[in-house]
Image (cartoon, rainbow, N blue to C red; front, side, top):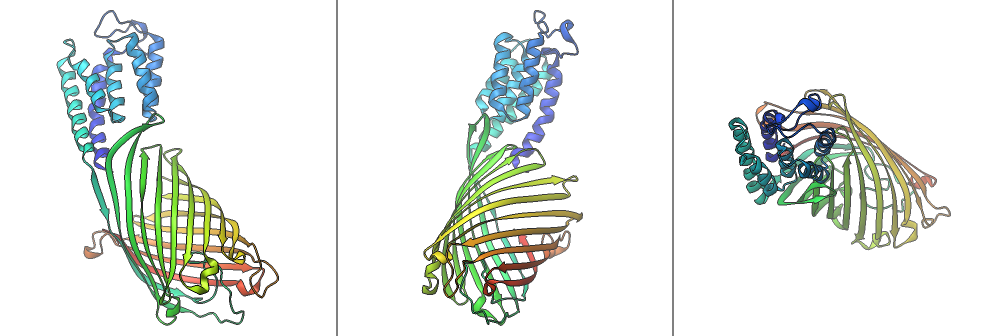
Length: 441
């Protein structure tokens, strides 16, 4: 939880106390018409009371602009209802309209009939508002440094198109699968820049941030070094966050690829995404991928392509946060220079993460992708029609209170690919086992 979140949790008890003290200013419906405020000429009004309750619900749901409008409607009818005015001040505070919050709270503070104990609570609220106003004016940077290293075993290092690296290739049907072991490692830096800029969007406060990062990944085999992979990733882009409602980001990313001992090429990405918080436990994400894939080596020039994909996914947390479920579906199209590399298709995935003990999690994932190519590859009469079933399972554990091992996570992961094709030369199976250690500093 950030500093602002902690401050809000500190502030809420103060506000709760303030509302108790102010209860006499707006009669509750349980007291009905026989209730009055500090001003004897203010009688209970059922219509205003219903409007007040509706405004409170909208404020707690995050619909701040609508809540502010309804509080103003109440006060235009009964300007001396200080309970409504203080709730309006809180709504302004949550909308980061600090000066408006201060003005409304001061109107109650300046009333000579406001009791001394209520004045103390209002003064504490005003101090909190002024402090948060100053803090949000100052931009802040947050740095993270993720690292990972480990061991990999692969029973099929050299055979089969790997869509996560580059497009399909022409294979020798007589090639023999080779197994090998190796090492994997990555290191990176992530920067989140809090600009201090806020604005209202659809009645909700929205914060503007900028996120950037760089990462280096290497997978090196002990014997089959021609199949080593290195990826340098650079990314940057804006992020908008409406807390408790939605978040969106637009990322520009460049992957610089090395395969074997040579420079392979660049994948340049534009990655838009938006996530909606449907409930506290359910969120839905819509994201896209636009990628220009440019290969440096002449033997891959026909694979230069433009890749487009759109995905809808959802995540759900249950059992007190111990079980997380996720799933989604995607459609994609890749338009390559040579039509026998051009393809389109769809995929889906389902998975889950279960906390089986403190700091220990089990996870599983299944994905299936179906892909069809536009033209037959050289020396074949039929177009490729393929599907890839991938099964992933693993367990991880995060060390605690163990000296230098504290906060390091150890993970064991098993991945099995069953890649089926109507052209037998392109069909393969692959099993990978990884043991990794990771930590974010």
